[in-house]
Image 1 (cartoon, one colour):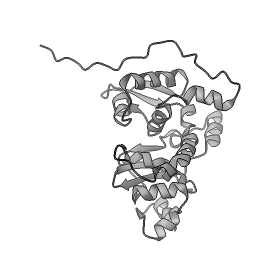
Image 2 (cartoon, helix red, strand yellow):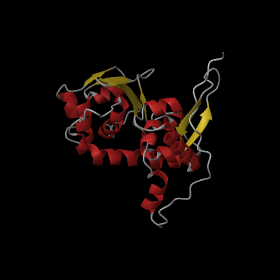
Image 3 (tube, one colour):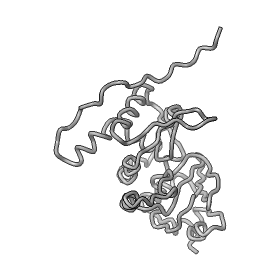
Image 4 (cartoon, one colour):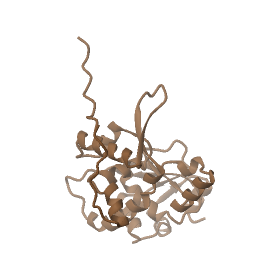
Length: 242
């Protein structure tokens, strides 16, 4: 008897939703697109680059398959994400953010900054993924001028991020000029080790949060031995304060 395949997530094949606040206000229009539960957290995951549905479901504990499929469909219809098929031998579909979706990074960063005081205590029921600490760390590294790939090692796991990224305005200007480079279109951060990192740092999650809140600067943490920087690249030199 042939092996039965697991059921695929239910497709949200319904017309484009018309639900709206119906207010001529930029904030209301934005919430029309991203105000539903889970949408911004899906954006957070897709800022790490193209993800398969199963990967998204694994890194969004608590979301149902139906809700995840529905939100992804809404994001496609709203121009925030696209779905594409990977070339052989992968033969898998992935979701990735559009330029408009990637422009939500400062929105998420500001939201994370506002919510940071609520992380004073980790609850026993709290899930955690290492790359969730990328947002506060990106804020602490905003002044780093060198572009490069930085691998970050925490007790919770390993992730990597890209430093020296241009602003949303610079990316928009580059797109209009037709000069968008691979570095500009790369994912902001990613789960797991980097293939060829320009530098590596080791620190703890609590320090990531303190860095994001501005309680301590990156340079101060390096100087106090709270962050270990390894590598011989210009990026590693800058991170060490050289």
